Image (cartoon, rainbow, N blue to C red):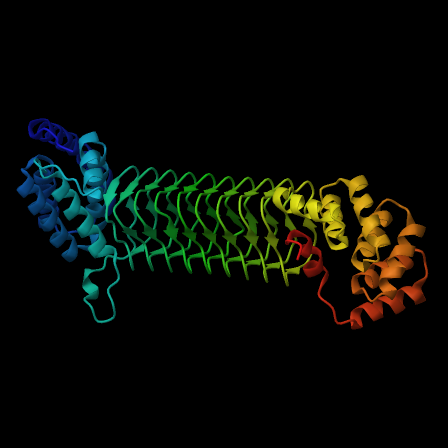
Length: 481
């Protein structure tokens, strides 16, 4: 793209004029609060350098930033002011459409001439911030690090921002745009971290970053995906209405707060939550998973909500743990739901859950005479609330001798209050060796006051070496062999 040099320069100069007003405002708001105790000579030098940053040439502005950096290195009281000035500078630069266009061209490697030096000023401001927010490696010049700094980069346009190993108090990036490659690897945020409405054009990594305060990525856009591997969130995490165009990697993510909310997130690429841990409620209501979704070995210590979620491909929850149950009510799972060897306490709510692809395959096999498919189809229909059709298929499979179908049919009849017929089918299945039927029969007999026989069946069920109920139950969501 070719930009007219004159128009580029004039718009850049106009932007720098606007910056002067913003820097003056920042100076007025922060000077009294943060500069108390600084030597008068340092304060005078600070004011002079701010004026130079407001009105000087590009080279004078670059020089002013380096001088402000040196001044803050020797005067702790000035550091917050300098950080606020640099953040304000980056925000004001970003308000210029021409400047944003220039950064996007940088991202696309089709750069027009930087006539007014705006990109150079942005680069130096970013570098100074990063240099003093980053904790160096052991023995690597700790004096450069400025502790307890907060940054406000709302609406800023940032190019190749590398905040890896940085330590920040509070951070605001709402509506910021991130161009090039962005990294927050091993960064630490001790206060809130807000990325609402932010736009990541390139790849971004938050791997091994830690967040002590509430963190928000609501309405964020990830064009080339993102990595949150081993990220730790000590408080709430909000990801609502975010949109990821390619793979999002949340492996070994850990959220210790009361809530991790991914409601209405659109995952266009693969979404990986292997071994993720959620200490509180985890909500994925109305989320859309357009590619493979993997929650294998995930731990849900609080309630897990996937109501109205749409899984366009397979959803893998094998070996995951649900301490407070899970809900997939009104969800749609186009392919398989894998839940082998799952540890569940509480109820798995599959009311009105749709499995269009799986259901169709089971129906075809059932109509061809497969008792296994009849059982799976009947179970699936039962969970969707289609009791009459479910009973029809389960009865056919039970009459064909399927112990699992007898168990499912007995359970369905028990729910309808048809105790005598339910007992008959459950007893047949229990005598055929079904541990689940033994358990359900024992429960039914106990309800009728037949305690001794109930206890005998329950003991026998406990001694039976068989797969757990969840493992057998979720087999219905797999293809018929």
